[in-house]
Length: 219
Figure 1: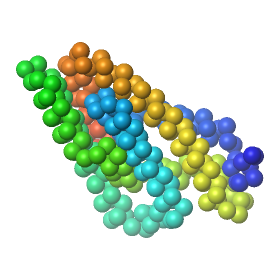
Figure 2 (figure 1 turned 180 degrees about the vertical axis):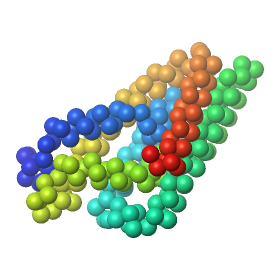
Figure 3 (figure 1 turned 90 degrees about the vertical axis):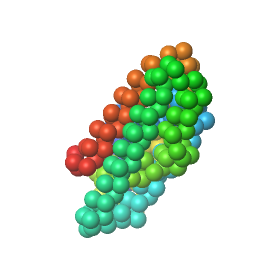
Figure 4 (figure 1 turned 30 degrees about the vertical axis):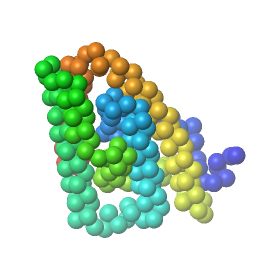
């Protein structure tokens, strides 16, 4: 099928741009990697599913006019931004606690499992879904990126957005699958090197704090 028939233009450029964007490290991908390496591939798969559902809901919200709503309601946008930042900080705190349990050699494996539970404190799907939905900037990103590849003369731009969203999600799911594989590989290595695992969790927690501050500063 020629996607120009549904208002999609410059498809190769869109695919290359999407791959580049998906490969950039962000809170979603880091959460999937950390969850998989801490709790196994099934938990990572649930987290990936939560990210995919969350992103799909955000893209659907664009079609329904959420971007205009946020632009016309600065208070709502600020509230969502604060909610997202607080949630990122909460995840960072959980990762730090897990790192502490892992780092202490005197704590038995059961103690590390307690840290794992505290790291999530909710089902991976729910946690990842909330992580995706509490970033209002994603709505503006999707609309600013997608509109570059939609024919302004096409009568039904929502259909164009749908096809672009499907392509993006296919690329995203492929990448998340690679992260699950990488996380499972890391998990086996971390069983022998708990201090290395602790360093990774601490590093990821610092990145989550950075993402939270960047979200608050609006950059």
